Image (cartoon, rainbow, N blue to C red):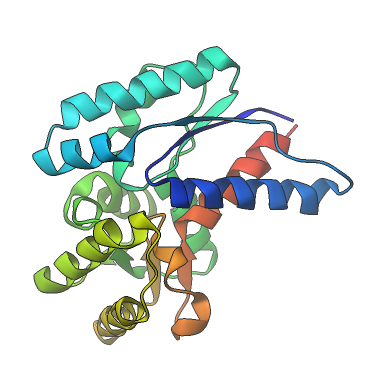
Length: 231
């Protein structure tokens, strides 16, 4: 079994989900008392959030590179960035380590491709929804058409992530807003929805909507186990 390196803490609520899903999946596959070999480098999200909203991506890139290098030094065989937004610097992180980085967008794209879907709605932070580092990868590598909510709805999605979900607050009113936004994406032709923030699956579940949801936390975590157990 390879050792999984996790860059976590963004937020710790979603990082706890990663740890849970990874170990549940190992137990499911291997049985007995098996659990995952893993290391987690957890950052202080208060610092990260401030730098994100200040637009200081250079400093954030240095923090992510250092985290990945520390995991590599600690014995990790590969690395996961446990948040969609910070894949903005995935290329720079990969360029500064010798072990593989499993890219969340690629793994999600493969899952969508398996279902034969091409027009996909994307929810996440404003950074993920509005910039090209994530949706551009899906468009270029998988030939998908990515649609996002309108400007006002994007702000609502973003605010709920930072002001509620990252603080562990699960509000029914916010869930209903998300479902309404998803239904608007369906009206615009979305065949599936990427929950492109690792906290969103804490709020919205498959049973809440009529088209496939692609939970990036679960996809990323389960793919890590597949890679760790691969010969």
